[in-house]
Amino acid sequence: MANPEPSEVLFFGRVLNADGTLKPPAQGEGGRPRGSRLEGRVVGRWTVLRFVGRTEKHGLSLYLCRCACGTERVLTHPCLTPHCSRRGASRSCGCLKKELTRARMTVHGGTANGIRTPEYRAWRSMRHRCKNAVTYIRAGIRVCEAWERSFGQFLADVGPMPAAGMRLDRMDGRRGYEPGNVRWATLKENARNKACNHFLTFRGVTRCVTEWAEVLGCSRRSIRNRLKRGMTVDEALGLPFTYSGRPRPTGD
Ligand SMILES: [Zn+2]
Image (cartoon, rainbow, N blue to C red; front, side, top):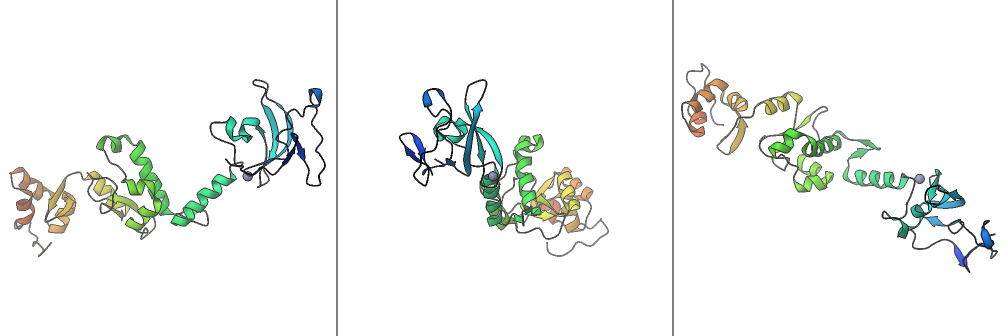
């Protein structure tokens, strides 16, 4: 697949040089060009320089090859022939993959001059957490499909990190990483949100108890006590807090 047009011209099974002369066959029994079949061939970025021997175990032909980037390596026959290997022929020493990855990241803005941006690192560790951290797996915290697939989509939805050192924060800790539930937060905000697992939804806004206490100008204890006494969330957060000593701010 990687080599639809072999650069060599075969003449009765032997390689024909550009000037029309035949390449001398490699030494082999009966003049058969053993092991030289691939010499001079271009496979992906590899140019096959010469046959160097066989593997001890399976007798696979070994070829010294040079990648377009200059790296030289000895490859086995299956590495150079797409039909002989499940993975297909080798395309390069690894430089091709690196370049493709770099190009992909550049399109999405994930790197600046090859250095990963903080947004990209946050995206990568978010995906890593959801796949590997036991607490996340148990809680069913997932990355939404669009973000899982594309860093670009994630960046478009969440936006760039406003200041250095910020973290991704799920506003509603019960929901996963999805548009509308994730913001950039300082380490402090993030830590508080993590520690605070008691979320209350009031007038369409979900906040943890600590945040509601701040917004309403009361203590966390006041809210918890009201809920314990059997008030609904609307009552617990909606009724004025007269005894806290602080005036309840108007509005939300
Ligand atoms: Zn290379």
